[in-house]
Amino acid sequence: MVGLNFNKVILSGATFHFAQLDNANFILADLRCASFQNADLSGANFSGADLRGADFRNANLTDTSFTNLQFGDALIDHKTRFSSESLKNLSPEQLAYVQKSLVNKPF
Image (cartoon, rainbow, N blue to C red; front, side, top):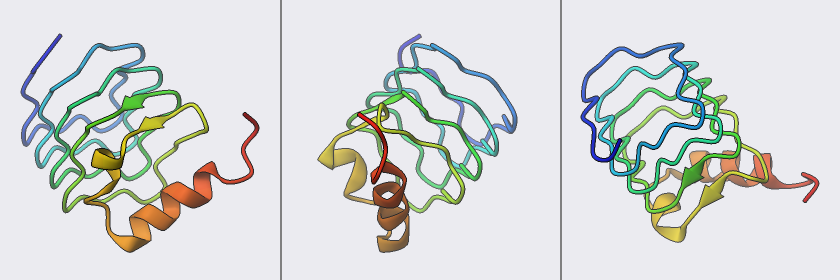
C-alpha cells in the first residue's frame, strides 16, 4: 500500500511484517514497540514519531525521513537498509545508536 497516512495515530504494538508501506506517513504517530520486520518503508515519513522499542529488523528504510523523533531501543540489524538520506536527520545520539547496533553483527 503506497502513500498511506498514519499521522497522529496510536499504533503501539502493531505488526506490519512484510508490509509494503513505501511513502507512508507516520508523522507524530505512536509506534512504540510496533514491528516492521521485513517491511518496505522506503520514502516513509516518521517525523516526530515515537519509535521507542520498534522493530525494524530486515526493513527497507531507504530515503526515509527521521526528524524530531524518539528512537531509543528500536531494533535494527545488519539487514536493515538505510540510505544517507535516511540518516541525515538523526541526532548524533540516534546516529550513534544505529552505528552501534550495526557494529559486530554477522554479515
